[in-house]
Image 1 (cartoon, one colour):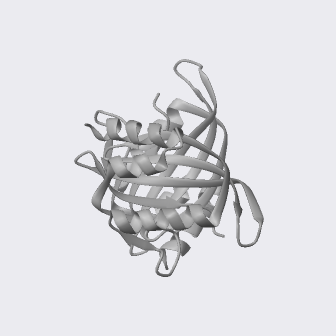
Image 2 (cartoon, rainbow over the protein chains, first blue to last red):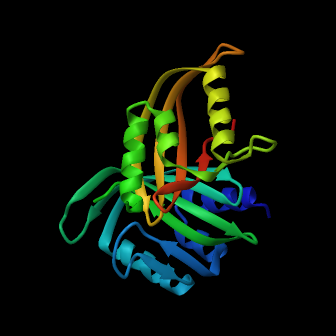
Length: 121
Length: 121
């Protein structure tokens, strides 16, 4: 699989709402996930740590809609744009039209790194 | 200068329309520029090569409007979103609402790499 083919198959699963399937199929065992924040959540390493982070997110947020655009490929990296409408359960605050970009690095047909960009909170 | 400060100062120049000043001030001597295409334009190395590429772009396209969003910072990298309205001079084709993202890597207060993402042409 070329990086472009990996990008397209991975993003197709995201567009179908199957984030768990996308992670299970494409995340490398030693994947590194980099959030744009300080503290212990900034860097996650390994599939189990990423799965726990994903479960934390879905437990603490109610998702109303996610629009996924891409992939936009350049070499062994690709970008995916997410537009989200969600509610933070703890506060009840609803956030609409929230943009976020995932930058994914492909190695041997798997995602070796994911790095997220978004406006400062 | 932290990567965040570099990102903000660089993007402020882009928002002011001063792409040349941004490049002159922040591009590292050995900057690498990666386009999402095949062929000799895919990789450019060094300030002079990037300047020539920029001149080629501005000579061959008439820019009507550029909207610049960002920077969105994560560690030593930041993302900038461009929305462009331009005409390809050779064909007269006008392209509106064209999205492009620049991913910049900062090293010692300078931009060491720029990598562009956009929909396939």
